[in-house]
Length: 388
Ligand SMILES: *Cc1c(COP(=O)(O)O)cnc(C)c1O
Image (cartoon, rainbow, N blue to C red; front, top):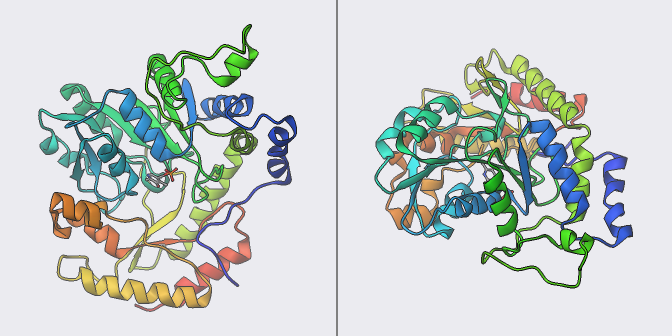
């Protein structure tokens, strides 16, 4: 048996949904994208949803629309996907890393205050792997210091914090529809916000800065006149093929979240007694979306001295699992250790010790909706066979 780290699972109806735009001939952002946005708003209870080409463009447009620019600083966790930091660079800003908590893999709220300077403009908490960041302290700091909050909710589908879906806490929430995420449109993203002016501005910026969309123009009284452009925007529009596929998956959104939680619960139970594998935590007040199943490999206590040995052991375990047919991955990467950031900012791995440890000692096991019971049993069997 071969178990991938993730596998796209689409129903026949979802596959058929892309034929609508192909048959109508309207392929670019139009009514299907609008339908996806509306369904996303209903599911996540976000007042406004704006579909774009990726979570990366969602974050880029959100920061740009909030006026983030040259010389401005934004605080991001050191353990996240690289693009949380890249969008700050793209806008001429400065990335200010903050360490994470090793138990949740999320930003350590108690370390944020020390990073705030007179140039800080935004905090970008990440709801990593479907677990919400601890938002209360972040939101109070943001209020006290007049900072924007842009949530990287790329993995946040189904994730809640005190009963509220992520993406509803900051100025904007940014989601991803890459195939590694729970809902997929190939590539794709969504911005959610409760601020109608921001939604409108992001909607325009994604569409060359035009004051009306192509669809509005085509449906209007004089479709032959071109729109005016109040902004020098970007082209970060989702296609209607993607919108149709996304909208179709939203009809079983809750089912997808429930299935992922069930798979995670089965892993949790199977691995509960393993002292060397720390399974994902989910404390009271949090609903986990399980975009993935990130564990901490801990055959001995993780310390600056033991990390490299544990890392070698983890990698040889990953080799073994791969040979057995079970694909795994490090949960994600520590961005401060990647060449660009390491070099540009002159950072050492130990400067963010928890992110460093997470980078070197984490392992994600296969988890995807559509995973069959015997497939999961196979993964469990292979993990239990291991003796560190
Ligand atoms: C996947 C991911 C992204 C990037 O999403 P794209 O849609 O591929 O741009 C950003 N941040 C995190 C935490 C992610 O997991």
